[in-house]
Image 1: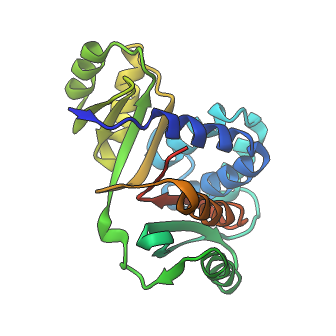
Image 2: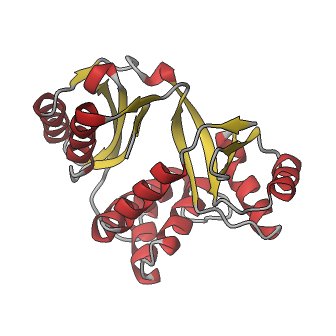
Length: 241
């Protein structure tokens, strides 16, 4: 199944993420802690923790940091008790935005998120106002040049829901959330290492922004991204770089 070109956007997002490694480590520590608290400290029986540990490894986080975060989550060490909270809203031209946070102070977090929306031309919506436009799923992205036929065969055999090739040759493997870990492991065993692998909220439709609107939308997304309590941002906006 073919899709429009998105590889440039993926590379841009990955580069921006890599440039904020210190903040990425902070976010990963929160995710490791919460994942261990909710599902236990054994990654073999806790897929969410397994994914968080894999991301920490990809981000070159020291193993001691990972271990301490897991121990705090599982109760072996004392630590801050974070809770997950989701905010939804609209950006430029009504673009849908989901902001997932982990916080120890909901009042602070909602005030900061609302301020970012208001300052950069967006507005917060009620719970459920945009989430219906997204699908909760697993996504593995492979660089152009990957053997499409072999990857498709391995992915579908492993239980993937769909394999999508964009106009630049990048390949996207989609899974159900609970099948993600098994599909990822099967593809790695077959020799396929994803450039990006995550469980996310994927928009059903996308809106391409260019010119001044693209600049405005990017400022809003960057402002939300820079908030300390924000873990992930999902939007149906595609910034035409």
